[in-house]
Image (cartoon, rainbow, N blue to C red; front, side, top):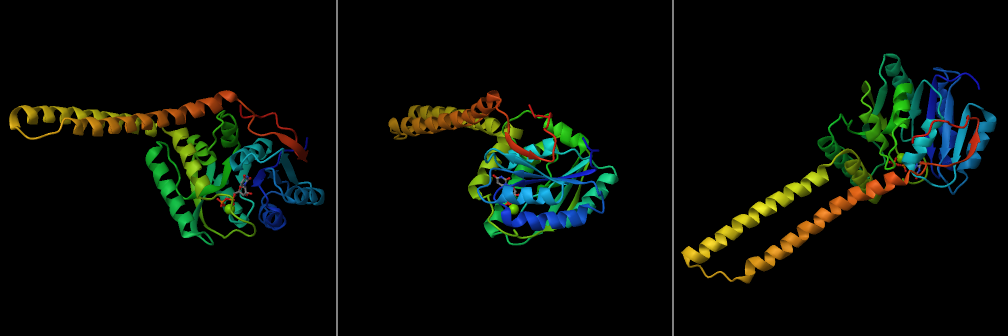
Length: 319
Ligand code: UDP
Ligand code: MG
């Protein structure tokens, strides 16, 4: 085994054949001066295009460029975990393949790490080439998360960040299956700071995160880090009980003492529908958590490796 590099860069890639070559070029230019023995771990997350071929070509050209090819598409979060578990650097940078996160920011991240921070987030200042809906939905997402979780959840950060060895090791110890990388990394609570940069438009290809996926991610993030939905349901149940008790007393009082013409079925019907709806809501929230228990108890590996190029098989698993 060769000596461990100081800096590892992990790149999850799904159908990114047109981005990898330029990404490697820019990564090398910004990381090589910091650590000539750096490594790049490209993770092929079940791409359908020539991504793996490009990775192999880059590996043949420069052995510091390594790859981990997963057997199928496991999703961004699992692909990032696969890359992290194979990285050996003292500092590990996680970056997207599509050049939306400029590799030129890495030296700044590294200098913060050298100052003693374990976690350096790259915070997005401006965003080029992203639609209004996407920007609005991300903004909403971060506000919501900050409000719901009780540890410091950094706003406006993507997955572009530097993690020290301690953070990476802590992250890899987390056994959960429903993984929300940003939240989990923040959860470790190591000393963190942020560096601001402007997010570029995608270099080539299309985004794989559409609104639907963002909503699913939000659901995962909320149920993974907060029991708020359950509490909300209990609060609603409490409010409804209080309201219907009050209404019953009022109806009885009005009938007996005020002589108002109140039909007997009115409250019966609305009350029935109302309570029925609340029960369904409760079942939905419980189902959300039961679903999580189900996937957690399955204990399936998070990813399966098909082929390795230049990296040692990882003995670190996250379960
Ligand atoms: N990605 C992945 N697996 C997937 C989807 C995406 O590894 O199933 C990678 C993708 O190649 C990119 C990063 O995750 O490097 C972020 O994806 P994308 O650019 O589509 O997301 P966005 O920047 O729009 O949030
Ligand atoms: Mg992108």
